[in-house]
Length: 243
Ligand SMILES: [Zn+2]
Image (cartoon, rainbow, N blue to C red; front, side):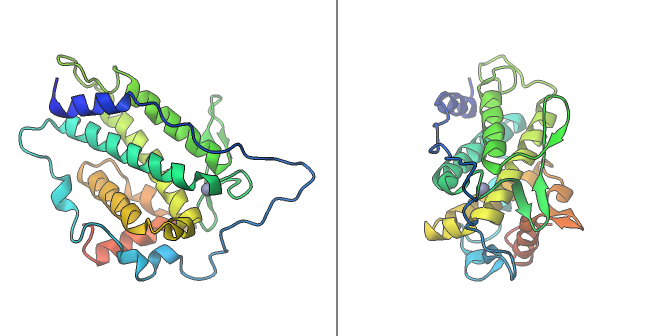
């Protein structure tokens, strides 16, 4: 058993903490006003000093490079495991503010909400907390599946591993995109923006290095841009990310 796999396995045994207080619903009451102010001006995450806030200074390229003697599949697996775990913890902290009322759709930009493909292959709108719960549960189940993330010596990664990881990456990106778009004020309130920015910049740099991310997913369509697309451009300009 390799070093990286043993970490992944021991950590992935921890079940995902059950989060969040149940969302009260009432048919008679109008929904409370959204805590997110309309994006009349530039989003806060693009403004100084928040856009520069980070735990790590400099370019992220150095920490995503494959270490010597490490198998690329294992390197990708352990990093994806870490991104998932950290993102899940951040979302757990702000999840009280992410309810069916505050976030009736999986919004990620002005005029952009992601839809979920259901079992009938239909594209449906889900409240963001439901969407994110589906994503995180799905990823946790993959991490726990020995056939997808093999951890025992002699077990190889399946041929489908790269495409599975790309799917995982795209969905985790959407969770980041929703948090930036809808919950950045809460991260600021918790003074978590340096941590969250560093996690996201690391995620982006890693995704580009191993071709797990399509730029069109980061930026969205011209008529429905993803909010974080502008953050990507800004960080490139600042030398935090490469092209
Ligand atoms: Zn939300």
